[in-house]
Length: 326
Image (cartoon, rainbow, N blue to C red):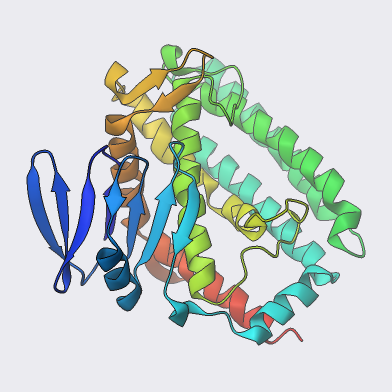
């Protein structure tokens, strides 16, 4: 279970082996057992006693910005990375094997995008034709990715980034066709979002970034040593590589909420610069919806686990591969 404190004035304290949440409406005690993370947004508070209990119980504490991105993290020293994993990770990132790994990531990302488009119900024959065309175009880019090769990732990274970008535009243009007219967006905008769907996507991706970074840390992987994303100073760039396998889960949750027309004016606000941001109610719905979706059990490669546990299993396999790589 995750504790999410995103309401201004909320505070979290310790009460023996549990936490006490205090809001303007009263106090609630929650046992520490079963809590996996504590997420704190601006305007909320946590005491040092509560932090120490979290560390004792190996509960990560994340400080989130208003877009859902983690800007700081406290975790138990018991997570400490094994040196052989980190050495193997670095050696792998500079090897030819890393080329095949990052190609596999992008191939699966595009395949996931195709699968989501296929599972959506086209409302008319014109939309159906457009979706089929988009899926074929995406397959063309998968073929390009399959065929390229290089000695190291830097040899192929510019081409892969370009193809991945074009494929994403094709995908989002097609995905747009399933949304109610009032929620269709002209382009994918990151920071800042220029409409409601992009504000929801940005927040959902931010949540997923935080979860994946925490999982990588727990299994002993250094999230700051990336494979294709290697140029950003002091950023958890490996998360940007791994998240590509799972972005489609956020896309599905956001599209489902929009298609249900579950969004009201209370969910978001528009700043003077025209940027869109989720407000408390919108963040609450997005957090609950995505967490519920990640908790659902699915089967991948013959293993049935929740979606979030599937990410954990993938990270464990990655750590074991890199531990043996040297």
